[in-house]
Structure formats: C-alpha cells, structure tokens
Image (tube, rainbow, N blue to C red; front, side, top):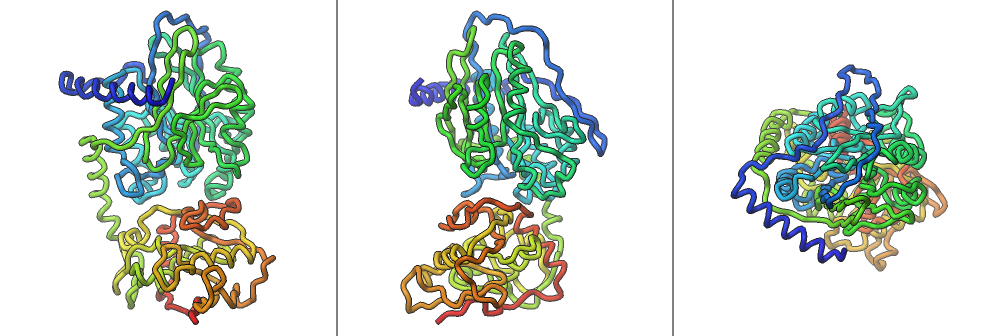
Length: 529
C-alpha cells in the first residue's frame, strides 16, 4: 500500500481514538496482551524458556488488523527535549490513541533502553522499567547497553518488568539467560515473537558486565527459532537489537536474507530511521524507529488465511499523557537529593562558558578529557567543546553540577586513529578559529599549535603525543564520545570501528574527581600563533 494511504489510515485512527476518548473515558488495554513470563528472583538467575503450544494455527476467516508500535535505542530519554525526542509521556498518548482505535495493538521495544540518562542510571534502570510498566509495553529484546549495570541486574530488571524481555542468543552456563520467545493469540491469529541481541554486546558494554555471558551466532539462533515456530504460529516476528551499520559483524539484513520465514523484523542498535521499512531478499519487512523517542514506529499487519499486507511508518510528537508525566516528574523530584550529593570541590571556577570552550582549552575541558584517559587507559583523548554546557563555581561540586555540564548522556568509546587521522581531526576542530565552533577539540596527552596565518585545513603544527612528534603512520588508541565517533560535528575520520565502550561522560568525571586533591589547571596543550 502506498505510504500516503498508510498515513491517511493513521489519521483516521487518531480521529476515531479521540472520539473514543470523549465517549468511553478510560478505554481498556487489549485483552490479548500476554501475561508476563515469571522469572525467579534469585541473585544468580536460572534461565527460562517459554513453552510453545503444539497446536497448528487455525484458519482465520475474516481479516484481522493488528497494530504494532515499536521503539528502540531510547537510552533513557524519558523526558522530552530538543535532542531527546517526544519523551515517554507523549509516547503514552500515542499508544493510548492506537489502543482506543484498535484493541489489537502491541507495544514493543528493541533495546538500549535502561541506560543513558541520570533518571535511569541513578536507579540502575529501575525507574525506566516502572515507566514502561505504566505505559503498558508488551515485549522487549535487550540491547548491549541494557547490560551496562551487569547481567545479574538486567535479569533483576526483567523480573520487575510486567512484560517479557526475550532473546534467543544470550547464553549463561550453557542455558538461555532469558526466554527465547513468546507466543500470543489475537482473534485467532497466533503470533510468535523471538528476540536477538547483537554479538557485539560482548565488547560494546564493559566486558566485566558480561564476563559469564555468551552471545551466540544470531543467524543460527534466528533459524532455530523459525524452525521451532513454523507450523505453530501464523506470524513470526523478530525483535532484534542488531542494526544495519556496515561496520556491524552481522546485520539485521544479513539475518533476514539468510533465514526465510520471518515476517517482521523490529530492529535496533544502529539508531536507524526506516520510514516505511525495507524488505529483505526473503521478503521480511525490517523496521527501525531511529533513536531517543524522536519517533514512534508503527506497523499495521492485516491477516486472513495468510499475510495480506505489512505497512510501516514513523510517527512524531503529540501532547503528553498526564499520568506518565506525573510519574516522571515524581521520579525527578525524588532524585533531587541524589543530585545534591557532593563529589568534589574546587578553589577556582571551572570554565565551561560557551565562547571559551568553543575557541580554546579550559580547565574544565582538561578535567573531562583527563577523566576519559582515567576511565579507558587510552593513549589520547578528544572531546568537543560543544558538549560542555556550563561552568562550575568555586566550592563543592555536586552530581547535579556535573550533569549540568554534561547533559546529553554521551558515553565514552575507544577506537584507533593514525597520526594522519588525528591531524585531520584537529584541523577540523580548529578550522573556524577564532570564531566559536562546537567541534573545537579538548585533548589529553596531545599538544599542538594553531598557526592562524595558514588557511583552514593546514593550521595544525608541532603535533605531539606524550611529548613525541607524531608521524602520519603512527597508530593510537583514542578515547572520544559516542557523538563524535558517529561523525557528530563532522568528525567522520573517527568512525574506524569501536574498540570498546565505557561509562557515560558524567559518570567518568564523577569517579575521576574522587581521585583528585585539586582540579587541573590549563596546561598549555594548545598554542596559538
């Protein structure tokens, strides 16, 4: 069906939902929403696998319309913001509208949900589970960052969730760590859903978090699930935190091209927006909603004795849901005391003023990149001045101060760069000097000169790492933030494949402050001539 037709259908559904809200206040959620799988509460979890029905699917005479709403890579962006999408309160409004118009509605998350913002990290993801429970999520597959608090904590969060968290390729001690799949039935249509988690999770969370976890081959796991579910269900859906990035070892497209029989693949990990979806060589429709709740993914399945159609789209923002907004506000209020916790002190102003951090190094910029070295052990560190959003006054330093300085929830990654790529990065970051530029580089273990007499692109001179002149062929492990690694601010030369992922920037600075007797001064890493 033409996407314009799909969007027209959605508009009609929204109008119907609004009418329903006036006539039938408090419309119920669908009766077909499956009961959560029980999980043991022990500290060392026993793996669980859902038992499927052995009955063959029965013919469905009339068309059954099923709306599937999906999110991915939310990274705890619970509150609406310029860079953070609609927030959970507005998401809840959209979900309510769909459920009012069509009780046959499922809400699914494709992972990287429990970590990324202070609202989540202060409670190790529990606050996000509470919000998702209130909204009424039906299923989720875990992403690599959902392991950031450790595997045992993720299992604990799965026990708190009022919806199954499933993955068919996460193994502990030879057994499944979570249920592999679930089967639900909607108006006689049997739907089998299974989860997958990227094998890259082994090194895209801290290795200690998954030391006793194995991530098996996702193509083989998908084939096993299709073999198991075929003949038992009418529709097979994979919820995969896999992604479409070319640098990914096994992409969602590779899985769907290799495994025939998956009707719908709800994807995450690469933060990709697939408005309308893409179709694999085997006919699987792959969908992904981008990142940070900037969109809600919507798939409409129409079924009658076989799949009639799969239509996909992305939906943007609406008015917030009051109950969810109140819950989020309550969590934020309760965290106010935590944000006031003192984690260090300074006798001088830590300079994070916009004009200063975007044109030169400051003591606050030095503190941040030094914390990145402390966290990762990398050879060098580089962060962008545009990510530093406030100064810190003399006196006690609180958690809230650090988060105000670093509000974006960025985390630290390491990759490798050659000497030539490092010089290219520094040329980019200094290309607008003396004009302000968000890309202006703050560096650790690096010194260089900006020769303002030269044209942009050839200004960096006397480049040294740890006091040694840099050759183009030298190779360094560099710590940077995930925004820059993804090419943000134009730093595309840093996208060389992630070596490892580490703590959020604010968390790393807080830990580093505890090791200091005094904050660092400006030490002349960058010379202007």
